[in-house]
Length: 67
Image 1: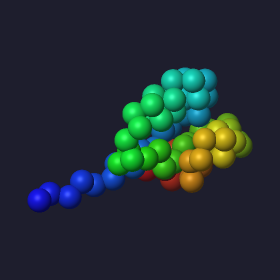
Image 2: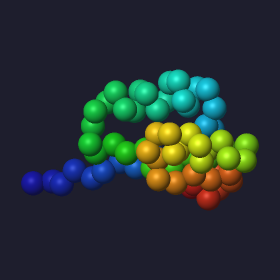
Image 3: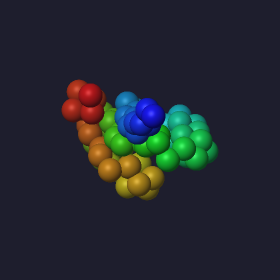
């Protein structure tokens, strides 16, 4: 039997589209094997605030750190 691996996602950009579309869409999946793990945004503090508000464990100002 093949084991199912957890999918960990990161989103580059933490603005309006991420907050109003991407994050709600991922949450609506209701799939325990899909996890939003990190956010990145060039605006200082934005990724951290959005991550904290949505239970995302990692936030970066440089997208290369997310990758």
